[in-house]
Length: 276
Image 1 (cartoon, one colour):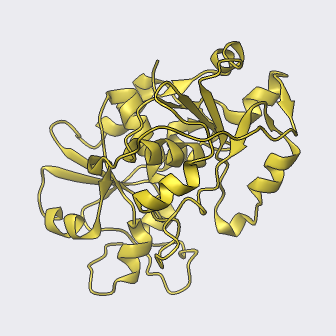
Image 2 (cartoon, helix red, strand yellow):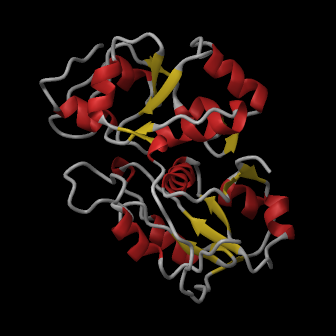
């Protein structure tokens, strides 16, 4: 299996007792969506809702930062995750949320996790089973542990800025990257981290939900001469950068960490340089 599974595969394996299915739908605050309410109305049979914001560091001023291991273990304990589990993440309308949750579990040492290609929209279009029923939760037994190679922090970014062996790729749209579009968070500077490159996350998908072919993924990333470079991924607040991390692993078998603070952390720190 790749990092993605098809709707056919999930349908054929829906009765597998080792499956753990998460609706990870997530939208930008400006979109004023309530994915949990949508989940309560309709979801794939057997799935639970994974709230990215609740699975975050509640004490951090930055939005939805990766939680401490203790907090993650406490939040995940009732989802029946064990050594033989296969976790499937999906979303409605885009793969941002599912990608973030995929990355989050990788960070916490869980390898057997996949994203449903096409998400809920494709599932519904194919008239596959949906429900309002909430599944019965059971205690998890998996021993989570942190894999630090999946994450990058501000001090590391500062250290490698002028090193040409490293490459920062920003997943925001072109306008935000170039600083011609105002940032959605009040007081946040516009622009990007110096020397970073731009690859909008949507350019790796079709209609925001279906991942493009491995061949096209390679073409997109190879435009930036990535060979023999250490890649770090950034975005607005560490969410959409996970689409790039997922795509690199899927298309090129490259493990690339996400700068979790991303532009929200960097842009608010007026001691740090920016480019437009």
